[in-house]
Length: 273
Image (tube, one colour):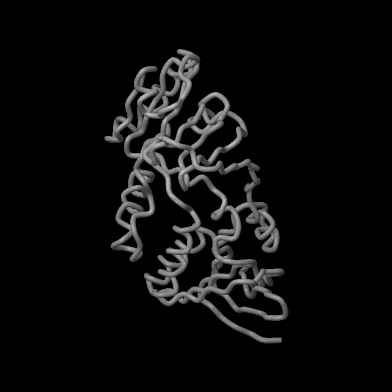
């Protein structure tokens, strides 16, 4: 049985875990990141990568705008090209009530300077060549929004974390934890016992299972989505925005000359509530 130690352990090697490990190491902490499989092996390699400022709450909007600015300046911070293509985020409305709701629920974003505009049917056809618009009444387009590759961003954060002094271990699943006198004492990884001062749980859909190791009921539940990548599509500009049918949640964006399609899992109008 071997023993190790770390001031802070981060459980999960996705985009959040790697970013947290990087910032903590930058601040001078002794950081150990533990990932059960490999960096970006879970949801961070499977997302559509949307980044938007279209939220109903002003704080969420401000955080999103800061995040978009960070990703655009990634070359300076992470030594990689910009991680977000600012092609926009377009919500489509099939009736006037939905369009009015979209406009109402983007007021906070507009009030703090996010560039969001209402598009009528003719403009939708210009924004997304080939889009059928005869059953639409309009849409709402966030000009500051866009999308990127979450896996690329995750690997960039991981590399930056290592450069800052963090230790990243893959194939290191945490199987148990020891709590003494109400405080975390050790983590178990195989037959290894690791003494830690604090833990950051960033295990994505597995966070609830990790929380149970510490006797915690974390309110994290998985949401299953379906993604399909098509063959190349002739005449499709790479600058087409992330496009969402607001009532159902079906959405798509260009990727590698083709289209990345995301099946509905409930209307995205719920995300504005």
